[in-house]
Image (cartoon, rainbow, N blue to C red):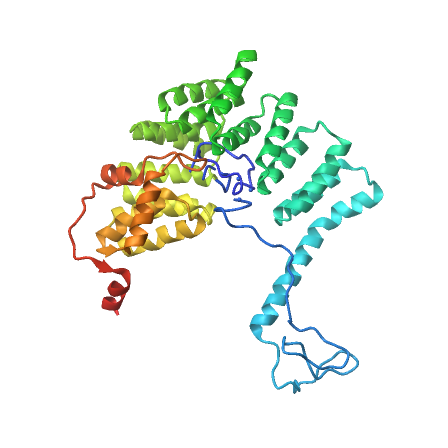
Length: 431
């Protein structure tokens, strides 16, 4: 699905259904809110550094780079009796660590003051949780939001925050339990339905996701969130016509739901109806022009229509909004390949794979570009990529067609028979 629940902190919508979507959420997009990104994007957050300017009473230094030649006041002389001073690199690490803690402390200060006056202030605890989440201190964030929920156990906003943080900690099962409780309290929470559905699809529990949405609709047909969730599951299963019907039902109840318009555009794109897809994407951008996934979808539609300049502009816009979106870089690589700027395409696709090493479509696209350049991989690498192709399956972040099909239909590429040259030899030739 198009949701990377770890990469979608700004909106925290965790959409299911878009290019790893939004899973997921940033993913997502795996959700690291990709928080965790690309499967790997977690930050330690301790901010600790070693041997960067610590002073002992004697003024002596060890080999870790601690300063020597310091008087009792703690000031060092200009000569630096060690014969060497602190390197700029080491000092920079200290500065960054101090900056991290300074920013964190500054952000926490108003909430801590509020809690000094009123220890049972749920909003202050929730505020601390949000700050810790922003700085990727997920365990601390979870502790704070739990304190808020002890005071207001049925607050839907706090429940959503808790579920979101649990996803950052890879505790999907616990997060699903929180979503179930949240939807009992607020059954038409679109973002909760979407993120819950995204998690279930990521866990390959499509039948349960579909059953949950249909059960909710059997009780109340006016739940736009449940209709949207149903459409997302159907799209993830490749049942795009049925998905569009569900999205239309969603939009009938909530015409300004940008996520549903974006997802409808994606389904239309996969049915090879690019003009209708563009209309849906344009409508979504009028409501929310700052959604990177929508710009990626727009870029892919322009690419399918052969409008490369517009496609490139859309991809660049997506990157400007979300620089760590692997799908945006993948889209840019595809467009550059269509413009025969294959070296630039390689760089873009490499960037996509650094951000999301398991991005199957980016791997396949990279292989196609390498083929155009006459670059071949080692036998072991070729075998590994072939095995990856056999294991291609829809995931939370993307539901697009295999890259090979997109290339054939959108770019009209044909394999060229060129002398096989290793990448190393190719670079040597250029030099």
